[in-house]
Amino acid sequence: MKSLFDQTKLAGLQLKNRFMRSATYDGAADSEGKVTDELCRIYKTLAQGEVGTIITGLTAVTDREQSYPGQMAIYDDTYIAGYKKLTDVVHAYGAQIILQLACVGSQCIPNALEGKVMWGPSAIEDIGYSTHPQEMTKEDIRFVQDAFGKGALRAKQAGFDGVQLHGAHGYLLSKFLNPYYNQRTDEYGGHIENRARMVLETYQAVRQKVGPEYPVLIKINCDDFMNESGLSFEECKYVCRRLSELGMDAIEVSGGSRSSARNKGPSRLSKRGPQSYFADYAAELARELPVPIILVGGNREPEALTRLINETQIEYISLSRTLISEPGLIRKWRENPVYEAKCGYCNKCYNPGGTKCILNQK
Ligand SMILES: Cc1cc2nc3c(=O)[nH]c(=O)nc-3n(C[C@H](O)[C@H](O)[C@H](O)COP(=O)(O)O)c2cc1C
Image 1: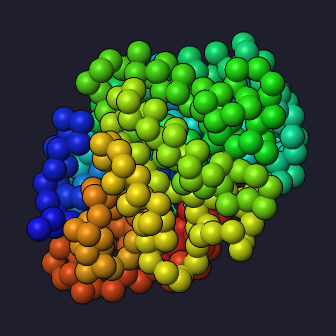
Image 2 (image 1 turned 90 degrees about the vertical axis):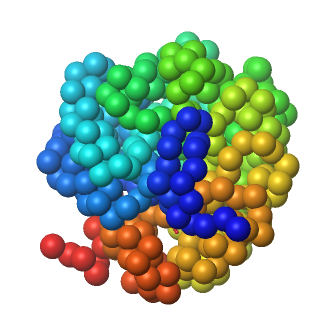
Image 3 (image 1 turned 135 degrees about the vertical axis):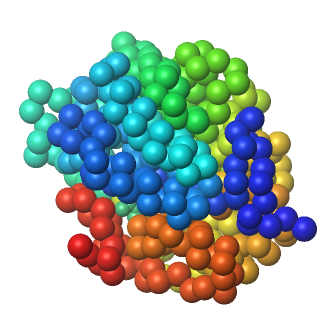
């Protein structure tokens, strides 16, 4: 019988349990996206709280885009020393730390764009953000893929245990997969084999920089859940199968974006309701593909989660909001499996001014 506290190996990494902190924008980097004492404190608390693997908040791979306030960045070598401090802090408590690499595309704050670009696969207004991206040229595409690769190499040099590509929630890579936002007529648009090209090539650019052994993960939408035609689950399966064939080390299954329709499926940030709301999608992917699957979204009771990992082939459980409100939650669960997480899924922590639980205001 599988336990949430099994020690497992993922792409050569020794993990002390099956829990991950899902990527969470902390808003605690400095104005250049560099590591601060506050950022180190947040990650130290998570590691002390016995989270086995911590995935950082989305981290900008290029300075051409507008970042969120306090967003982490990794677009040149001057970032490496600060990240070394961060990875050392986490490693001191026996946890692993994975850097999430991202381009935000049209999901940015539009009033601060001076001197910055807003990229999209096509020049189509972002429904969720009311922003108007410019269509990427092939040169832009190559630039971004190269930036992901270089960011990944810097992450490796800074002591991160792996990287995760942000391919979910309507950020740039996710937009390429989406037929509503990607209306290109070249080899990056059209049927899913073409729409997947950006994600597959970005993965290959990263792999080429970090080598065959270094853990590379992706977070992806099972479905975009839009009224307009977004990425479907069948198409998601195709992308995941191709990524798995190319050597992707693990896939975290999420869904939806700010462009999603409420009645089409669970949101990436569904409020308190059914637990583990992407479980059916993740279970199907886990059944069909050899790559380890990580489930995110509304995971909140060890008993139910234990059943889930035993009744399906899902290997890892990741959490965001519950760990914002209680960074020590995994230790509490280890000591008391019926401990009830305090998070009410109110989403007040999701706040561009900085990530904070209203239960824990300091
Ligand atoms: C404040 C906040 C910031 C987030 N930042 C990111 C992010 O940087 N990258 C990402 O992939 N997901 C991000 N997410 C989504 C979470 O990783 C996760 O997919 C979602 O919250 C559902 O998991 P949960 O029910 O355990 O909170 C964020 C969520 C919250 C609440």
